[in-house]
Length: 120
Image (cartoon, rainbow, N blue to C red; front, side, top):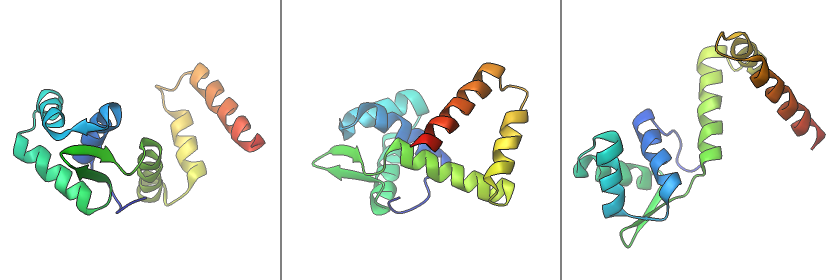
């Protein structure tokens, strides 16, 4: 992945960007004010920080991502597994599967996805 970690507030920004990119920075500022309650200065600071880390590009007042949502999600999962489950993916999956909010239907869907990926 580009320049590394995307912090929580930056991730919320990226969720908006991925939805609307490529987007004019003025429009992006409006969306961040609307959805995140950010000032123009905050939005521009985040754009600059993410640009410096190679996560977004701001060219001619048009902002685009250089990291896909899938890449960012994978990075966040890796961090969670490392920090909370000592790097053990099976421990992460076990904790997830035992979670009270996970339904039988969701577990069946996860089984189907695992089988599908193993087949590739």
